Image (cartoon, rainbow, N blue to C red; front, side, top):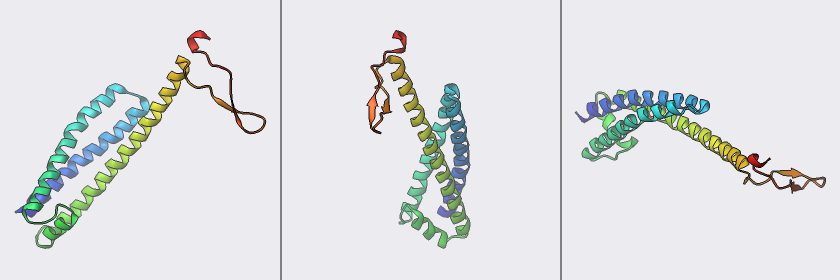
Length: 156
């Protein structure tokens, strides 16, 4: 009974995680295009998927704990060893783990793109406001030197 319920939860999470991975890939494209409307839509679509994944993870953990097992891979392997669907449990669990790793890698990639974009925007705003520090240039000795005082673009 618990083994089939675990398998159902894992299979449901595989479907959800595939959808999440697709949204993360679409998010990367929208970030590159700076399409805020699309980003907002993607965030709205990701939120319920993340909530469902969290809910199912808690349900799987609870099932394993009810059996007196740890809520980790070792607990799942114990259930699989005594189950008719044990092979499917382990295979699908591994597939889910790979999908979750793909989502995590995509999320990290998107985070790097966001941080790069933020730094670029901060730099541009600093230049436009005139409060950005003057760029450093190399002098004849190989050291760095400051250029003259920068004025805001509006005062140039």
